[in-house]
Length: 239
Image (cartoon, rainbow, N blue to C red):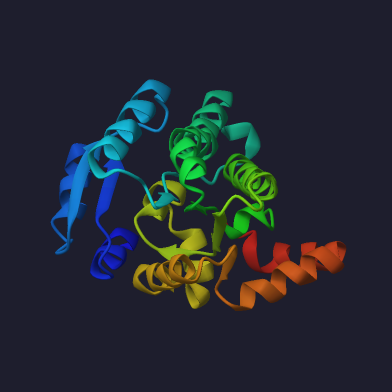
C-alpha cells in the first residue's frame, strides 16, 4: 500500500521481498513506475547485491522504507527460542542490513531518508508479545541512535509507530482472532496508514505515531508508567 501511494506521487518504486508471488501480487496494483526484486532481508550478501544493483541502475536511492516484518502473539514459554531469533533477524537485523547497504551512497550525496516501520509495541509492551515487542524496541533504539549519528549529514531517519492495522499481519500473529476482536474499535485501515507515511516522507518528519491518540498514550506511559501499565493491561492484554 505504501508503494502504491509513493508511486502515485511520482516516485519510481523498487519493491523487494523474498516471495515472488507476493511481489507480483503487489506489483499488479501499482500503476506508476516500478520494478520488482527478489530479496531476503535475512541474507546479507543478497541485500548488498540488490541494493548495489538498484543504485548502479538508477544512480541513487532517495528514500529507503524498511517495512519487512512479522509477529506472533504467544506466551513466552510457548515461544521457541528459535522463533525469537528468527523474528529479530527479520524485524531488526533486516533493517540494519538494508540501512548499511544504502547509507554510503546517501552519505556521499549528503541527502536521503531512511523510514523504519516500527510499532506502538516498541513504545508500550503488552502480554504475549515478548518476541515482537523486543524487535520493535530494537528498531526504535537503532533509529534514535542512528538519527543522532547522522545529524547534520542531510539524511533524515524517520520512524513510524502504528497501532493495529487491518492487514493479513494478524492471520499469523493472532490466528484465533481474539486480539483483533478486542482492538477492532481503534484498528486502522491500511490505506489511511499509507497516506500518513507518504506525508511523513514528503515532509521528512522524524516520527509518526498512529492513531493520533497514541501520542497521548505514549506520553502517559512515559510520565506515569505504573498507571499506564494498569490501563494497558485492561485494554491491550487480550490476546
